[in-house]
Length: 109
Image 1 (cartoon, rainbow, N blue to C red):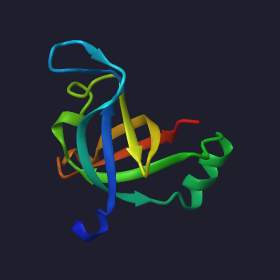
Image 2 (cartoon, one colour):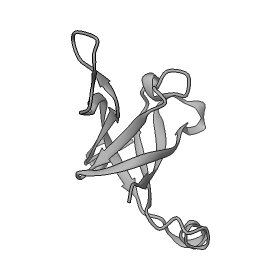
Image 3 (cartoon, rainbow, N blue to C red):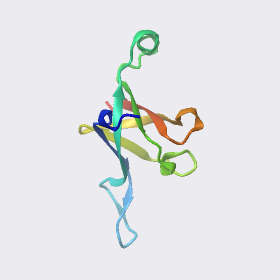
């Protein structure tokens, strides 16, 4: 793993936050921050994404974070990349090695 390639900042935010007094807030709160490598869709992956009309999907590789696994992360989690909100399509532990994770997101239009 080359840490120099992880140059994209991803903010994982919950869409409905709770303030210090326990009341719901309208502003999102940051769940965690991850530095990621953007993977460009190429070849077969690019054409399959074009066929299923997934033009705004992006694939990132991040370091493993247990709190982002299915049983630990909140259901209302969104990803903010370069000021654009994205819905999470999937987060997978690469090869089950607990070293990196692949995050697939779709831009919210």
